Length: 177
Image (cartoon, rainbow, N blue to C red; front, side):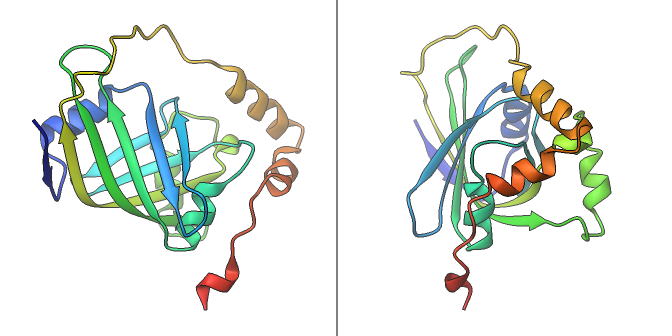
């Protein structure tokens, strides 16, 4: 049924590229955060790293947990075709604008650059696959465009930066000592 290994295999990479939704779970000693993620915001860079473009939202626990050396699990599951659940256990690195690769990472995404709140590089240390036979079949229709439209409009009005600051969950800096 299931197995665990250290790096993505080619079939895993193809599976990830075909998915329309994934789940991002993280924790850094506080509550475990679990969020469904849509849009085309995840890129496989190689068999042990992923690049994620975070968009604006009500909070920013991904940033908080990455800053505090938290643990991340990214889950992809098949709603069509053969059943499969793929779990990626990771550590996250925040890619700052000052990073030499920042601009080239931004170019990996077909998104209005102003709406990308953060970039994260996920370093995979374990991959786990399981059968997924209890996951129902579901049909993908299309993406909801409301968030992208809202963020682009906020960016054009120079209000997105202020919104992101207001809805940012401050990191627990005491954990960095």
